[in-house]
Image (cartoon, rainbow over all chains, first blue to last red; front, side):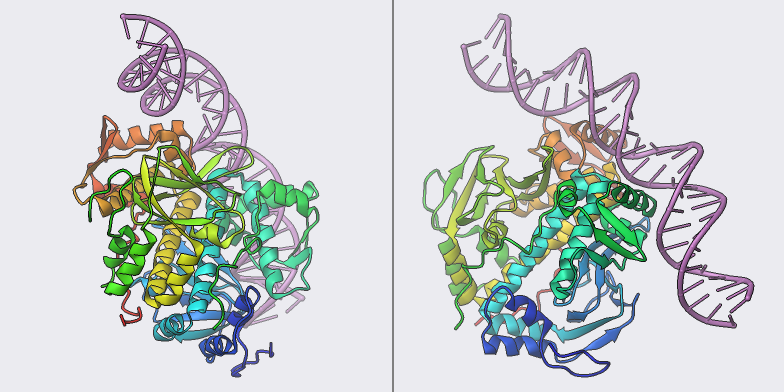
Length: 253
Length: 253
DNA sequence: TCAGCGCATTAACATCGATCAATGCGCCCG
DNA sequence: CGGGCGCATTGATCGATGTTAATGCGCTGA
């Protein structure tokens, strides 16, 4: 994929890259996806792309960087719903409601490609196989959410932190194949807590404990997964981007 | 809709009823949906329609009764992911994985209509607007899951139980408009606990507390929402089947 | 260079919800 | 009619995680 420069219009499509990993795309499908990423917008770390309860006129493809979606509760506490990586589509849920059910916020400097509801609607109509693929990714996300639901409902603090580390590494590896056991996590302990339903203080305790038990290593903002097997066992972790069966998808036309 | 009798093939479609509440369906769309519900199967309370980690060859529309989906963790604990009501489509997530990520189990005697992957795939291809609607319902479900995620991560036991009661009532009312403030909940306290991430014992305490505070009434297996406003406030509850904006959907052909 | 600030770390203490255990109640079935 | 079983209820205690608060460390910007 071409490098992304400030303000430059580039060809290629992150979305096509992601979808194309699962199924062979036709040239027509590729170019339809590329049209969604014609425009791009650079946003700063901390910037809010869409706020909960406001109406979002646009959808986005995340092209570069790390984002999150979260909700705020009445008492001011925050629940991070999902971390977003390059190639993810943002804001589908806000499109179906008059008011967005969640906030989209950049965790690092990011590049996003905005497109409007009509373009999305047209894509679904003109390219049924892409519509089916988008439904598939919506379901993958749904299952990943149910995994986290089960984690919050039924597993210990340590297991939830371990699961977050494994998931983060796997998803980062999706866009950067050079990542193996070590990576910069790019999250504060408070953010980890808001994702796992814990306090920052307790996240710190759990990280130290995982380190003392020799499951992970830490240093200079990076985490190393030392005993991945034990970590996955402690976490009940399943990678939901594996084990797919898309053989039922409509054939390319 | 025609009454459903034992073993009878009936016309009409629960799915069409549910989708048709949101958008005017064309005759062609209606008949395509009806074809999904040509066959039907009666299952008993407690029966398992699909087991986690087994492969599911079929999808279903729930026509009658109450079901749930859940996962079991290594330590034997259970997390109920979702309750399923008439008109819900079951097993989409199992279709995209070689092994189902969740178990489908009947909470009451039920009637389901099975159809195969190919029929679903064909529906998506032939009826882009239905594909878009199915994506919409997949997103509604996703948002409902994020609400529960936030509840498990950030709210008290009492709030989670209150939210479950409100949600159950609202969804039951979807198929039975006669339900207002009182309803038979059809769940054991253990099941409520497995849905809310609590123990049955603590669910009991929370129900008693809600009753003592005058928010709910209980008796002979039924629950009455006495102070609905206060309940919704205590629960941070939002009905995700309201506030939709589907104006961007493709027009009927 | 130094001040300020955000974040990490650690300790002491508080609390919510889990666990363990006992009792009761209603229903089904022999 | 009586026994057993599943579920609800309640109390006593325990433990995991939250809360509060103090300290440190490494940026960044004046």
